[in-house]
Image (tube, rainbow, N blue to C red; front, side, top):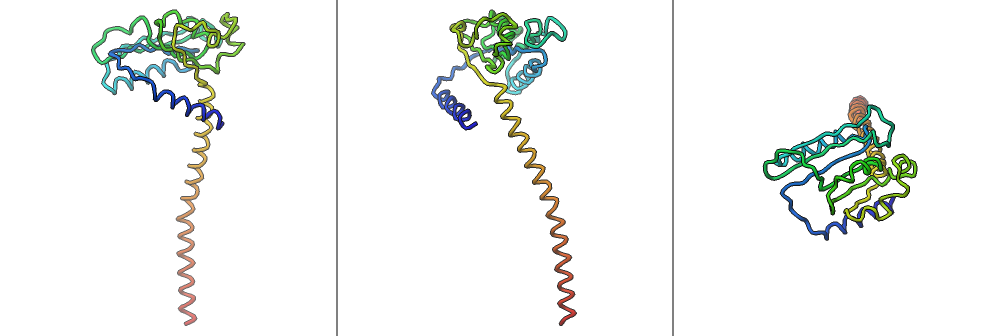
Length: 206
């Protein structure tokens, strides 16, 4: 765990040195299995962008098949968001950034990502089984086939598991604190009664 967290802090340190570029408009596409939450993610991203004052245009892309097997090309779902600091009228054709949750999403959408664009990939989903389902003979994240893009491999499932673990621990601590705070008034009441009885007893003895 410590090693993993150290790698995160190192990557954050590296990112601080990167030049920040201001763009007038950006097109982002989220893609993954139906059920991965791509529609919800896209809508949340759209809401956040709107709150910041950007103009937005969106395009949800639903799977070709209803309840297609997980990890297959026919089950890929997507959501494209075009946001800009000026008025826009369409969701765009060529994404500047592609966020993919599995190999199937990569295979379906990589042809649309602009040359030199940003690819954010859920590295945890690139297992031999998932690669085989969509016809990859090797892992595209490692075989240099994506050299025309800026690739960021992220262990999304691992991060999700860590977040869930800390969330559960936090919930348990909250429950414990609530239990303790409920006991305090009871303890005070018992102490108050004890002091009153002691005072009465002391008065009688005097």
